[in-house]
Length: 166
Image (cartoon, rainbow, N blue to C red; front, side):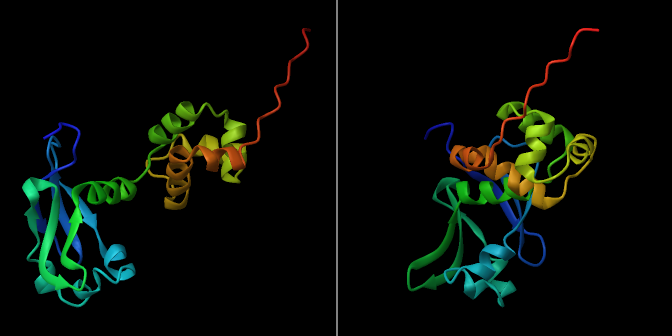
């Protein structure tokens, strides 16, 4: 099996619709809240009111996914490890350091980042010092980083001003 394939090494329920998951090659467990997935999917709807069934989660296919002992009209109830990792990554808070890295990787000035996010330049500067940014900012930043068309649709270059020599 390829080394870059996402696989689950351990899983256990952590209360409510939260799973404590360790991915292969990760050093720590992640708590992943799958409430939104369950609430918004007809496929996962049987788990919404059945926490006992939710607690019976198991690793399947050598870690390529998780499954529950529920049959749906589409087949066994399961989720891929790669989908689960994507949810985990989206749920991670974004820090000021993460924001600085995002801005640098996209080559955005403070002004350009402010314009694309619809906030003031000082707000962007304050984000760089925060332990945790508002979730809406993290969601927007991740979406912009993933989709070059999205950033192209909203990017406005900052005017470069040259200062006169005194």
